[in-house]
Every structure is written in C-alpha cells, then in structure tokens.
Length: 230
Image 1 (tube, one colour):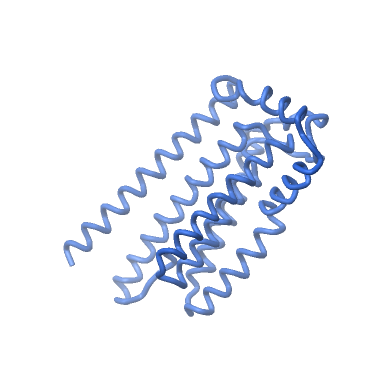
Image 2 (cartoon, one colour):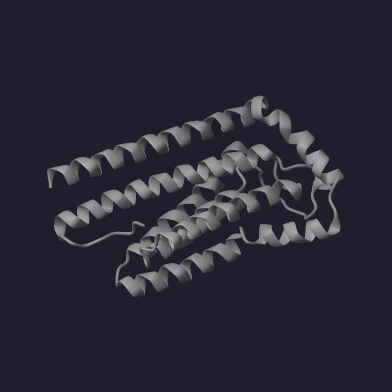
C-alpha cells in the first residue's frame, strides 16, 4: 500500500511539473506575440508565402480538415461519446471529463483572445472569411483537446494497447492537421497555432492531474472505484 501511494505521488508530481513546463512555454509564445518578436518573425512571411501558393484542390482539402476542429462538430461528437461511455461504465466521470476538458478550453481560449486582442491576417490572405481575434487559435486548441478526449474516452472502454496507441496517434495527427490547416487558409499565424497547441497540452495536463486526484479520492472513499482516467 505504501509503495502504491508513493508511486501515485510521484505520478502527480510529474504531472504538475509537466503542466508548469507547458504553461511556461505558452507564456513564452504569448510574450513573443505581445512584443512582436522572436517566434513571430516567421508569421507574416509564412502566411504570405502560403497565400501565393494555394491550389483549389488543396484548399478544398484544407477546408474539410479545418471543419473537424470546429466547435459545432467537436462539441456534439465529444458530448455523445461521453454520454455513451458514461452509460457503459455507469459513472458520471466521462461526462465530467468532457465538460472540464472541452468546456474549460473553450472558455480559456476565448478569455485569452479578448485579453490579447491580436488581429487576424489581412482578409486578402484568407482563403475563407473569418472574423474575431487571432491568438490563440480556437480550432487548434479545441481540436487537440477534443480529439484527445475522444481517445481518452475510448481508452476507458478497452485495455488493448494497440487500440489505445492508435487512438492517441490519430488524435494527435488530427490536431496537427487542423492546426496546420488554419495557417494554410490564412486565418491564423503560425504563432497562433503553436500557442494553441501549448495551451491545449497545458489544459489537458491539468485535467489529467485533476482526474488522477479525483480518482485517488474516490478510492479512499470507496475502494475499488475508478474515475475518468485512461
């Protein structure tokens, strides 16, 4: 029992350090955006180059990819998945996980957008018309958290390593593609997307640590019970 407690504490400490490290990297990107230096020097040249080299077929593909990161798609899909897993496991854990994960990242992203108030690339650079502030990319944060939540929920239903690995690999690959599509379409700068990835990873780490603590507390109250962990 003592060995299990020690291992659990080590996992939590490692998780907290990971969250702090990722959060620190996000702050670095945020600082670069605010000062318009460092990482942001690649923003304008990248957007301009991509705008000059778009092709109709590739643009159509990128629009389809970016749609996967839209809240109108992610919210119902993750919600339905959470409800299905909750019913299967007879636990509110998956629903709480989805609410904290996806609801939290949307609130956090929108708050930071308003505080930073960074303009998007100029309309002539945009392959699709988009308004609102630019940093961080909402599609990027939402897709990474949403896809990872779907992988996490799937992992609650299976112990097969191959299935779990495939789920996480697809989640990460999908989120990367959505982020890149935002830059290709000229609606975000590269630093918006990089900041979005870091913010999403920070939030996922915080949710994972919280879920671990919640699970440990439930085990103390009801030995043998489990929370929303993969």
